[in-house]
Length: 78
Image (cartoon, rainbow, N blue to C red; front, side, top):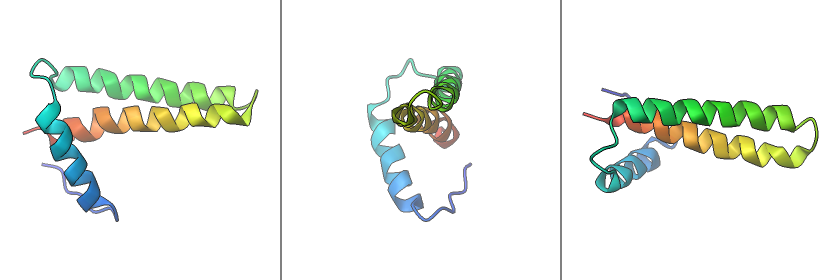
């Protein structure tokens, strides 16, 4: 069980419930781990490319969203 203690925990819990209702049955814990790992790679890529242009930091933000989905939702699974 995941204990949520952040300032946005109420909002995050609502988002996780909303996502859980729409999650396909074939998406299991292993797939969500893979999604979280892809998010981490996108984050690293965004930071590396930010040396070329600061606009690549948007890629990093997208990576954080992908990583959050993979990790937070996986931890919320029963």
